[in-house]
Image (tube, rainbow, N blue to C red; front, top):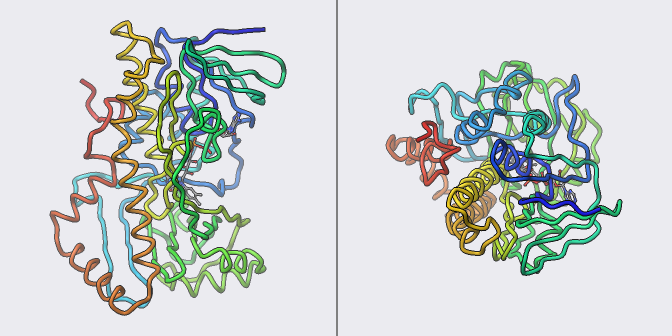
Length: 404
Ligand SMILES: Cc1cc2nc3c(=O)[nH]c(=O)nc-3n(C[C@H](O)[C@H](O)[C@H](O)COP(=O)(O)OP(=O)(O)OC[C@H]3O[C@@H](n4cnc5c(N)ncnc54)[C@H](O)[C@@H]3O)c2cc1C
């Protein structure tokens, strides 16, 4: 059986589902396919959480998915504290300094995905096919064809790869990536602490990698992301809970008092990568399929949401101007718009990781000066806060607060 679509999105993760919502209620016929059923939110906190910028929040509001997240569980970050191991440098960011109620939100990945999938089911022009396995992808002059393992075949004017870092769509298009294996793993877990977090996100830079405590809606509960060299991470993952808590306490210090309980731990390999192209005729890549960054800046999926909002804007304009959504010229506009920002973030997170994991005295001195100077320089600090929160920059309309 063959079905024709304007757009087929492979990958209904956070970014693919967000793109589908952004194309909802349009004249485009859209299919989203995923091999895995969407995450389900249980009683316990999801191990995977994301720091969500204010630009991403605006995007969710504009596509009608924010209410579905806020109704489940979202946690505001009012302040951010960053400091380094054995150094005098520290930076504090406070939302009040830029006149905002919060700097970001911490939201469980399952909450984000559930709200987006719930929303896309409300659009009659969007079909969600899940679970399905892709058997073959073919790109031709007149479009793209996806054959599913159940024998169905989908034809599209535009195929979008939102299928994550190991993207089959990217491979089918023969697009190479530049990658740097960081030889690090990010360990994630949920912990409870003696003192309340007071909606402050805390990050300590250790010589072995950064350790973040991200505040959840329960005042004594945080989600941790502990990035460490692979050998050290494996060691930490192999410890029993009491041994891990003891190492975690030593690494983090006592600003939240005693670490009291620990949920299950998982380690994710970390890599920096960037696709050499985001588009080809009838094809576009978004999210981790196009780029991965170090989680230390909490920007990875936010870049993906900006890709989705930008691609949707470019495609809807093409429709309004009766242009082919798979045309190279249309897609190149998306690629030019997003590449600069994404490359900058890949480089910044890579550079930060080097700067903070280096214990040469001269580098550590520079680091401490840099942090103290930035902390004292109010305009620079405000600029960083506004930029990191997604209040500045060349944003697509769906991520801007006031739609024109
Ligand atoms: C430890 C850690 C902490 C992080 N913290 C943050 C943070 O605080 N803030 C932030 O912004 N980012 C963070 N990130 C990054 C963020 O998790 C990723 O950028 C994000 O998950 C990418 O979303 P995506 O939808 O592009 O890809 P994915 O989440 O990888 O989703 C891809 C989807 O495609 C589907 N799929 C794949 N292949 C196929 C196929 N062949 N057929 C059908 N379906 C397919 C998969 O099932 C999946 O649903 C973190 C990452 C890590 C590792």
